[in-house]
Length: 476
Image (cartoon, rainbow, N blue to C red; front, side, top):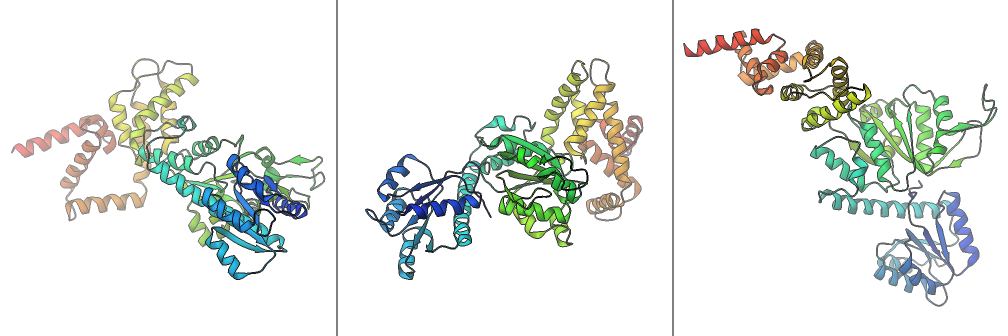
């Protein structure tokens, strides 16, 4: 697996034999590793490292002037963060142990088999990347500051949970591994994907593809393109979208709906950093960053054999779960004002002013459709709005309709019954149940009788009568 990021420092190859350096360079480039520097004089290594960054050093042990063993000790002393792979013609176990003690990450014996060489380099780089990410995570999670808040300016939130997600995104921004974003429909997964893209300073383009409903041929043609004559109707050559995302982010939405055949191709793309155009036998290389989203439980899909386990683990190298709006209700007032301004501008109207009661009403609702549902409520209300204070009527009607729909769900009814039973510790009478529900509704509505009545599905007058009757009963 080629895990070298687009913005990684080059690999440094050190050997006194120029032909060997050429051979190593060709092997690495064939694996898609393009950033390579070679040095054939060991005396130049330490001065070079003082002025340049490198991701890894492949170091020959037997060289004139300064031996590889001496260099290894110096590198480990002055640049301990740079991993070193030792290469030698001598198969000496004691020497190998000694080199590992001095900080070498691997020990290869000449002549080196191509796949062994590539896998060693990639494994060492993978460990280096993971160590770097752990270090970055510690830094970001232990501080309150974001490195670049502008990257997240398109996301309206004051939630601490979301701030933690932002810190995590900055910590893994330079990682070459895929990112999986999970969360309910409407929570803003694509917005998070764009923030990941913007956090990566080397990522130039953002290509989004919704894979739901794409069969294998459409998926391959859309992403990888085709050669002329690859299938009926392929009258000309077509480059796929992945070419546009070469130095950027490939965002795959609804990844849980991807067919098994397409999953195999995506796995190859992530694992080998290569793909095949339809009608071609020659693989193409790519360095695109893959970000995927799903609102499904992929683990359960894996367990029934509809999603490949190996692909799941590749995709979830970094995983971000976005909390639903009901778990960050502190965002509701800010989202409300944002959508009011956005809707008013799109409809060429003055931004209406919401009442405090409206925010209270919205805070009593669980928003099964999340941020997208709130946006729809606001746009509908602004479309109906004439002037002055924003009416709560359209919000009450929308929320009331959704609550009636949810009440028809048997599981919701069972949950409510269990909650009442637990609260009263036995099966309640109708009067006790009514008192309990009215109290709960008023608590949620922060004492606002109009909102409490809409929660209960009755008129304000009907609620007022019940409250008066309850007060009279208590006085008696």
